[in-house]
Length: 88
Image (cartoon, rainbow, N blue to C red; front, side, top):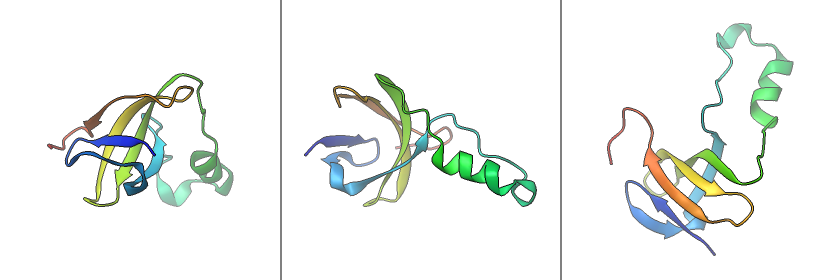
């Protein structure tokens, strides 16, 4: 078990979190004109870098999304921060 740092609630058990997406990955717009292929690529084609990665996570307990920086090889969590415009 790992402990993840929610910027709103503090350190919590990893089972309380859900991966959302890579940080900085632009959503295809306008939604009504996005092809099925482009939408599938947005949902399923992730870079999955080796080493440090910035990812958007959802803390299921408080319902807040945030950015977590972690090392995908060592599983070390480097830190977390609120999304732009949100306050902890």
